[in-house]
Structures are given as C-alpha cells and as structure tokens.
Length: 257
Image (cartoon, rainbow, N blue to C red):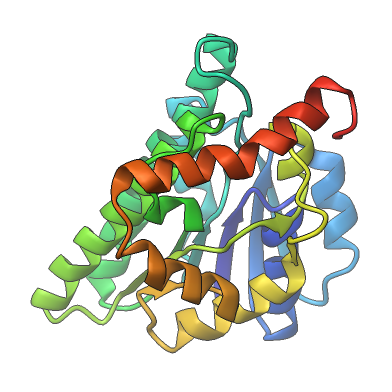
C-alpha cells in the first residue's frame, strides 16, 4: 500500500505521514523543502519516496502525477493563506496561493481520481477548512474563497461517484484553526484556539477510511457549523471580520509571527 501526501513537510501533512507509516503505508512525500522531507523520512518506518515540486506550476503537478506511480491514498494537502486587506495583499503572492490551493488541488485530484476510478479503489482527501462553510472572510478573502472551492468541488464530484456506484472514497477535511506553520505564513495567531495538527490528522484519517465525505474535527466546530446555517450571509461576514480584526491589530503592532 502506498500513500501520496502533498505539503508533507509540516503540519497536518507531516503528521499524516507519521500516522500512515505506522499503519504500514509506504509513502510518497512532496513539498518544496527537500531537507524537511529528508528529516521526516528518518522518523518513518516504511519506504519513503521524496519528490520536490512547486505545485504553483502546472508542469510540476503533471510531473508529480507521472513520478508518483501507483498509489492507494492521496492526501491533497498543499496550501497556504495570506492575511490582510484585499487591496493591500501582494497580487503575485495571492495568485500563487490561488494556483496552489485551487488549481493544483483540482488538477491533481482529477489526475489521480481517473487512476482510482479505473481500478475502482482508493482514497482521496482534499484538505479544505471550516472557512469553507462561510460566505467569505474579510482579511483572509482569497483563502476563504479557495477553501470554499475545495469543499464544493469535492462534494459535487463525490456525489457523482456515488451515482456511478464507485468504490473510490473522496472526502474533504474541514478543520477549524490548527496550530501549524499556516499562522506564520498568513500572519495570524491561533494560539488560544488552535487544535494540534496531530489530533486533526489522526481524526481525519480515521474518518476517511470509514468513508466520511465531509470531515469536521472537534465538537466546537461541528456546533459552529450547525449554527451558521441559521445566520444570514451579512451577519456571517461581519462575524468573520470581527474574529480576524484583533489579529490584524496584533500584526500591525508586530505581535504575531
């Protein structure tokens, strides 16, 4: 059995690699930082293939699919966020985020899903976010939009697979704040509320192998998801802004990572 994990050098991806290795999976790990992947490989008990690609580049996505070979589990995890006013966020960096979070996710899911459907087996986990349930998120505008794209695409394609009686499992992971390097990249701080990436990774894999289509770790986020169904979009947008505003002030004061 072999599993491929994108964004495996840190956070949820790194912890999923450890858990899957403990379960007996050989691993294909990809990220841009080879030294991180090589260090991780020394902690794993199964065979590890390291492939370093920049998934913001279309040609690297195709190359990853070619070189990964046959796999049984695909963790489509690579992604990052950018914090700030929409008009002030660097456009080139923003486009890179869109390419990684949405285009690369879409491209890789389609390539590997075709392989899985042909043999009628396999598991794909697209890593979205609880932000995907919101109509938007001021100060994390692009990030929220990409995560909604991931969730909606996954649910739509999964429904199509079920109509075709396919045995392939396609799921979306929608965690709340997680204590990972996302905070440092995006310029926010989830210290008081973030769950550990290890607990999220273990919960997500357990639910994936049980065939759960939308995976929301933790009772707090499940309750929050339930109540967002009853609030108008305008109220949810205001709530998202109010939640992010203290982090903006902290960033301006130099208090965040």
